[in-house]
Length: 189
Length: 172
Image (cartoon, rainbow over all chains, first blue to last red; front, top):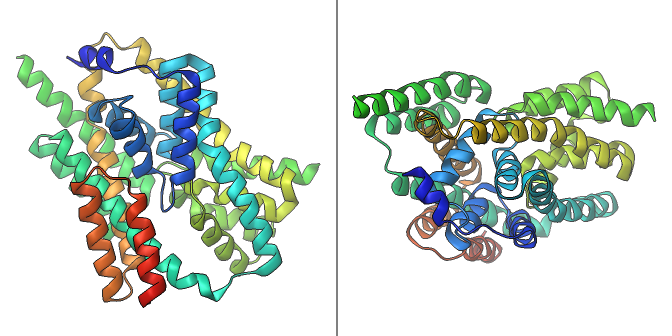
């Protein structure tokens, strides 16, 4: 069943992979996560919602930004080491150029007050964008009830209890894997 | 030269601790660059982190901005490489492992078990961003409209970001 999904997906060429990741990096205001999913799953259809979520899940338990880890893994999946380098370079090159420009402006002018209301509005919209992406993924993935509980525990731990992220990962990653494996064993039995 | 090496080592250590991304290592980053090495003061640290948030891209690039502040272009290069390379090598190995294990029937369900964590943490960071951004009634309206727009439509999220900025400019 999983293999069918992989066979259906079109494999992007190296240039397409690079340009897709340049787009993800450049558009990633207020967090690159929603854009990564938007480009890979919705716009270019390189991966199914489920395949993408699984790569992201692995990226989450490794150190480093999950989208950055996903770029390494997705790049390797399509084009080996070259693919990893291409996807990662694409992801970071745009933001790095903008950061260099911002750093120079910051040193020259400091912070300008006129920009604040605009940035406040963008920050609010970005928050909604991230929440909307999570709801959409959950809806498309249709996880069984016990895994929904694990997801809600992650929300509570991160947003309301403000627990350290490594602690949340160490507790909930094994729990999620166990519950998911148990369900597949039951189905097989 | 020794300064550049110190930058590389400091951020290289952070790279392997950053489970869940930049926010996980923010306290440790602060300890290293402000307390241990004395590369900047408290206020500069906060301002540089905010500056990195204003740019697109993964917020782990806060390390790049700090590197620039400490030692210019070479410092930025060292901080970025230090922050990205160790984690990237791990991710590369992990992908190789999943490819080798692909035939195993337990792999897919095991991997799917990590999905709720990933999606839950996305939602969690959205809520944290909303708590920080929700300063008045208008920002709550923007958050709600943006949530529904991204959830229910397939249009580019760029529209709500631009719309949110324009509304902020007009009304805030």
